Length: 311
Image (cartoon, rainbow, N blue to C red):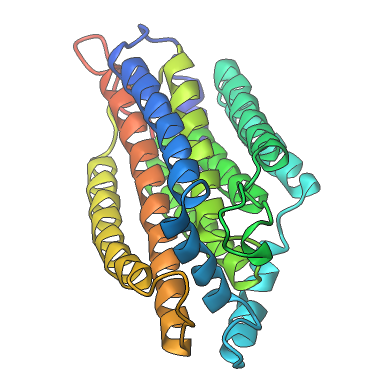
């Protein structure tokens, strides 16, 4: 990796400012903002999905099913979730910015600060200012936790590192970031900290800021992206579609229960499974968009004037 970085530093930095990845980044940001509103409207401001959202939390909680399985899951999830803190966020941001500066990517370091700071501040603002209207579902449905700050932090740190590492290591960074982000998001559900909509909202906030910083990018690296980039995008997009379809089947079954029917343990498990699969689907979509935007940015540097790929 050190050799790759040294080669990259000696290859030249500035390339013509591409347009396609800027437009794509802006479109992703706008679409993500619209999706954030849609999650709020459907899972907080209406009865049906709000019921399924809460039932998923009840099924995931340590005490929700009245069995020991939730406690066993929490024993695995707690160490991952507990990693998130202001100190860790700051430390990861320093590492990412340091790597960007070592690669002489000053603009990228600024983007990373904007991404991590903007996403986490946005999530905390929504958590403080968005209220859950009384829809007659009982007090247990009224506590506000939207969006998930832990998920936002995990996703923003993961995206920052993906942006900071050299091109050759992006596919691995994307996979590792996806696994960490998904484990953190589902882990907050297992600990009864957050509903699926909270986690999904946090993921979409990070996606919006990812699109924005991509649209602001003005200094591109020379060379083409490796073939693994296209493969990564295709696999993540396929995983998002597959898990999204499975999530919809489970959520549809949960919606069929009705808000007045007492759910069984099996109903709670199905609700938890549907919520978890929805989180996985959105996480895959977020990282597929990230990989796609980076690949498109790389293509904007290709052409007769482009230098050979340096990693």
